[in-house]
Image 1 (cartoon, rainbow, N blue to C red):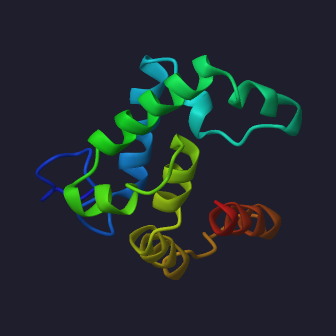
Image 2 (cartoon, rainbow, N blue to C red; image 1 turned 180 degrees about the vertical axis):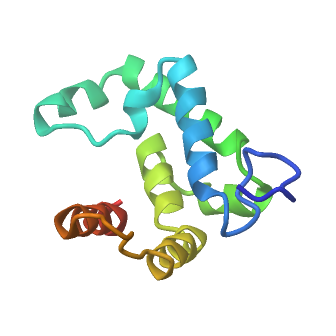
Length: 127
């Protein structure tokens, strides 16, 4: 996380997306809304059409949007669900820059098993 960040919940630079994501997940979990940013199984799709789900989903979208700077709020003004907004933020250029930095710094530690190294690399790439 950037030590220059005026608010730890904003995404002001390309260096603190993962800290913001953790804070956002915790904020949603406190309100019992974490299911709204998780990909749903096809058999759970019926739940999305209920008024209760739609109301809670709008609350989750508000929680996520409130944690963003105005620049990023503009990115999520079009999505109609918390999951759509979450995916837009996850795929934002700042997140990609941070992932690229992690890949450039990724090295095989001395004495570490190559299979574990490859597994860690795949985890980083597929995150």
